[in-house]
Length: 244
Image (cartoon, rainbow, N blue to C red; front, top):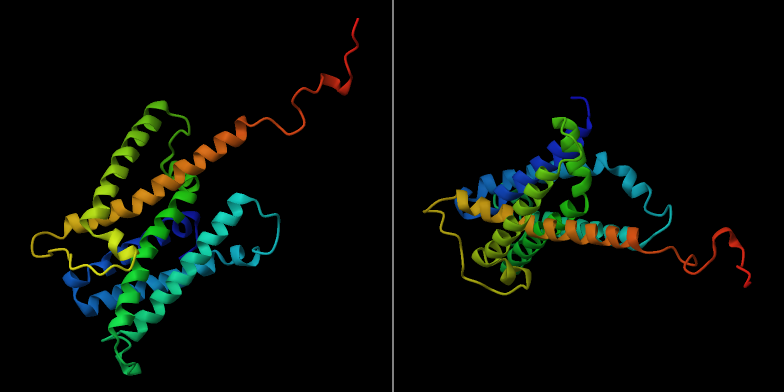
């Protein structure tokens, strides 16, 4: 299949997100599907890295401003978490990598879940940083006009509502406890319904994405309205006005 922006920028990350969400439903899927979905996610991640290999090559090129420092730090944090998630996945595997005969450890499992929860939050922030690019590509694919006041306000209201659901979902899923490595007995009851579980997790990812996007929008707006250094009070044309 020929590589296109649709595949590289939308379908590939979307498929990774789906496999990551499915992997979180361990008590519903049980172990074998959990490991299969996790392995598929890491395989797609490898493809994602290959597609974006030039980002790594350009790390030491160009000037670093505050935004670029933030983006690089976030990506490195995501990479570290993914490496931890991969290594602990192999270490605690009961099916696909069981032939390695690595001794099981309850602490390794705790680190695995701790890293998985942080990956979800960082993925949300990552999405928020690139949201403008994602929306621009989506508009291009759907052939939508770039300027539409009604659609803009509809999206803003939807984002506010989704962020509110995200705050609620953090509490429902006990995400706050897991992010701080706090032990919790709260487990989703998959005997009732699995659909709300994925809905809550989608809202959990959406919350940091929305917050990050609007923080970056506010930062860009401040930079646009900020007067250029050294131009305040300077007469036009560089000449000093003479007093009559």
